[in-house]
Image (cartoon, rainbow, N blue to C red; front, side, top):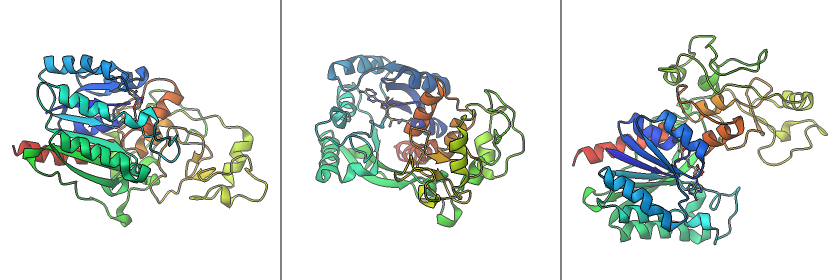
Length: 354
Ligand SMILES: C[S@@+](CC[C@H](N)C(=O)[O-])C[C@H]1O[C@@H](n2cnc3c(N)ncnc32)[C@H](O)[C@@H]1O
């Protein structure tokens, strides 16, 4: 079962598909370093740096895939800035239209893909009075795909992070409707920050390095799963904060933020998520592409790339390439692989029943 990943980033979404037994044949993005990471972590795959906003660029992708016999599934996570509350919300923002390339490619291929999955932020459903969502649905219908959409809450699928994402799943009409995977965990079973990362070195003495040793046995089933096929720890390098930053964060209690600081402390950052310290007994906040405002539940520093990757459910043998800033961006942009895995598993059931 062959998969094309559009707006692939480092490939969190498609890694979940790979884990569920799909063959990810091509990843497309317009950022080289994300594609390098993608290639490094996917078996026998190809990548292409293509600007998907330009319709003239799509033929190259289609020719490549037609030569290889096409694809069964297209997955796509177009950038969410145009839709999200934190980015630009201009209705005419070109980026809002990027999802058209998904349907264009599906139309241009010799063999119609069996399924198309589009992922985005939940805000997409209601923005512009629901027009963006309607447009996506119209395209599914026009191309003869059934369409189901749902907001999935990552902790319900074993991801130790409060992340909500909207998924549209379209199936070629003769497969009928897609049924989203059942939730596997209830609120009192959520994987906590502690269960996710407590085995990773604190970095209180060293700054860490590439290829460092595990210093203890896994402390949870989740850690066992994350460490499978991984002998060393990568992407676990600490950030050198100033004494001032360290002293401010030291005053934030677990689960607290800037509102819990004494008057006059940490005034430089006052917005919603400023000076947020994770709670050891809860999932993490939503991992974003920056790395400045969220802090470790126990140590007075921001989480490392590897800790964020754990919160996103990337296994330790998934390695991020590029500078630290580029690595944080790749992790924060991604669909949690575990979420991708559960969707992929469900899709496989439908397609295997053909
Ligand atoms: C939300 S991220 C996708 C993450 C990916 N689905 C994952 O799970 O790792 C969106 C991606 O779209 C890429 N992108 C943005 N504009 C693009 C364009 N015009 N053409 C191709 N890729 C683009 C970004 O570089 C980014 O990696």
